[in-house]
Length: 420
Image 1 (cartoon, rainbow, N blue to C red):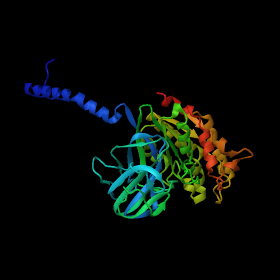
Image 2 (cartoon, one colour):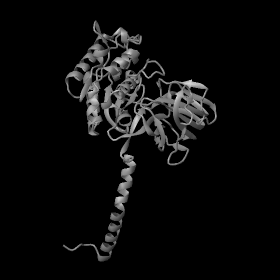
Image 3 (cartoon, helix red, strand yellow):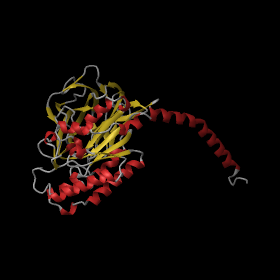
Image 4 (spheres, rainbow, N blue to C red):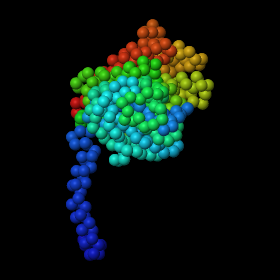
């Protein structure tokens, strides 16, 4: 059959096609090199969930130095900054990363200037994320980094993560991003800092822990890395078959799966905090207690959820994880009786928790289940935390309780991915 195209158009089409085919191998090679970093790949090694600050920290031409404890080390790093809840562009005047020497100090000779598309400054649009260019910096597995951020204008830090569990530093006015140490006021929150990535082996991947204050590590000892995700990361590093796995803590204190309360709901932030994490291969979901308990605490019957509602929410998380190839692991809900607020706990709410945990254990909806309830409960009073694991508020574990949670996780759940 003869082509319907006129001769001059067929000639032009042939010329353009030949030109495209000639440059295509080069384009493909360039894209492949950029995505794979040679024979290695980018993997997130640390992250927190951005939250809207109810009382934003006021920053006026000052430097923030924030300490992060990575899970997986590497020789090349890049940093994520979030303006998720900003209403105007966030201007970063300069940003640096270095090995932390403890406190507000950095290790001499390790300071690196961060750039953004080659420029030392950037204006991050409201609601957006910025990723720095890569820098060469060797950080050990389970090592500490200091990320320093100079904000040249008057800024209300509307985007933060409330519970850093690390001491961070706000300087006097001025750009101290390259300073050997920063004194000044301190904060136990992260501001604008949301993630850090390293170049790692092809078989590396990330485990994302999604949850509320128990995942976030509330009431664990500050500056000692005693949350269950940190402690899980240490266990993974001690095992050769899992040492290429990072752990990202995306817990938010007071967070619910189905409704906004403290932080955007788990269902709404799932794409940003889990699926969009570089190298994510697994998600551990520990959410539901706040969904069941908070409506009574705040006296809002319109937000009461049934066990069926909560199960449906979890099934949606599982489907969304599976759609992008992540293995979904569920955690049973810990006991909470004894929290000293009227209406927080009732026998009827305990029955809901028990029913949900029974579904978690028996439904086989999740790829695997970690029975945190069995680890943390008092055998003589199953609706209460074991006293040895109780931080004192009867809801949140202490350091020993968080360690028991991490120790209860079967590392073979992750071994297949690590050995691919």
